Length: 170
Length: 103
Image 1 (tube, each protein chain N blue to C red):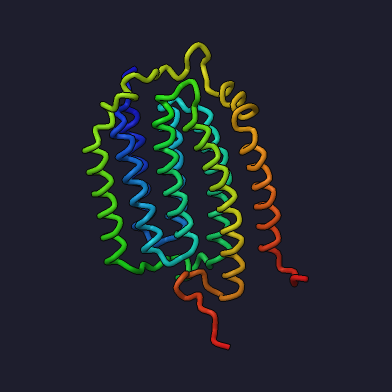
Image 2 (tube, helix red, strand yellow):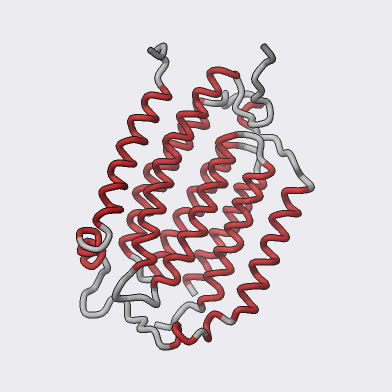
């Protein structure tokens, strides 16, 4: 029941993000979408992902996007309004995509796949959260992607700071 | 506690993906295009987490979605820095008004 409330909230705010022309309204409705997706992650037994979603998306990416809106448009005149292009092809392509994906999902009868029926769905098991197993996996199975990810974040940090500075390039 | 049907989660992911595609295609402002890309990332993440529920000992879907969130954060930082530079240079952030003048 809670899942459907979160799902309707996510779809409505996502649709509002697409339909509104005001950039700031779009940013804040993206906030509602990300928050309801974090709620859905909690319902899917992914507590660590939900907290990461809150911290990285809502706390980081959305603040970056709001800064981007404020720095790249003047809020009091028309530049905060985004105009639409491709008003025929855009809804056509995404509508066809939605119909195709929905038809595939409904036809595939995913819930009766053999490996899903035999799968163990007791995610939490004896311990009460996934934090411990994710921590152990980050240090054993996926330690190389983890280190590469830290290098990627460092490169993105330096690159973003270098691109955004005003100084003349050497 | 009853299980949420897998189809409903996947349909929610499909709807969010289509909305993200719609935002990417129809919007002119570069920041809204970025928001559409974030919506697409979130739709993919939702599917990964949904299937990870059937894999409790390995949690591969959740690990993958962690790395997706990480790459999305790095992408947003770099892309917004580029948008700011483009706005300073062209005095607009509309993606179809950014043209290099003929030399």
